[in-house]
Every structure is written in structure tokens, then in C-alpha cells.
Image (tube, helix red, strand yellow):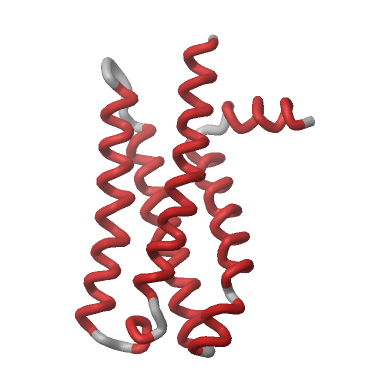
Length: 138
């Protein structure tokens, strides 16, 4: 069963990759939700939810635009496109939230972005390496 799951993960396209990432981020959100709820109430919950959404949107956009690349050196170009988008969108959101100094900033939006970013980066890297390994083996 584990081998079948690993095989299925290697065959995921960009949409499946994004859905898998969304599922993992949703699990991470559910696990961490009591912390912002106890610390900041509803503002903390909104900060965590919006941070997870920003990270997922950035990752999904990077995956989608990276999938459009084909040709020589495609792995490197895909990685650079995905990495640029995955870093730029959350960083921009963090700067905007911190400059406004609103309730999201006080509720720790930036910290939630950092946490979800690390989760998303780990999952995305594992899925990408699995996909490269599968292509190299065939």
C-alpha cells in the first residue's frame, strides 16, 4: 500500500501537486489553530488562515507557472520560476501587513507565514524530487 501511494505521488501533475499541498497545509492549520485562538482570539485565527492561504496561493502559482516550462534545462528553470513566485508573494504580503500595523500584524501573521512556508517548501520539495526520480527511472 505504501509503495502504491509513493508511485501515485510521483505521477501527480501540477493540479494534483497543488491539491496535495493544500491538504497538507490544511492539516498544519488544523493542528496549529489552537495556538492563535488562545493567544489572539479571532484575529489570531484569521491571521493563521490568511497566512496559510497566501502560502498555498504562492506555491500553487509557482507550480502552475513552472509546469508551463519545457525544453533543455527545464528542471532548473522550473525551480527558479517556482522559487521566485513562492518567495515573492508571501514576502510582499508580510511587508504589506507589517506596514499597515493592523490586527493581522499584532496577531502574528508573519510568524504564521514563516511556519506554513516551511511546511509548503518541504512538501513541494519532496513531491518535486519524487517526480524527478520517477522521470529519471523511466
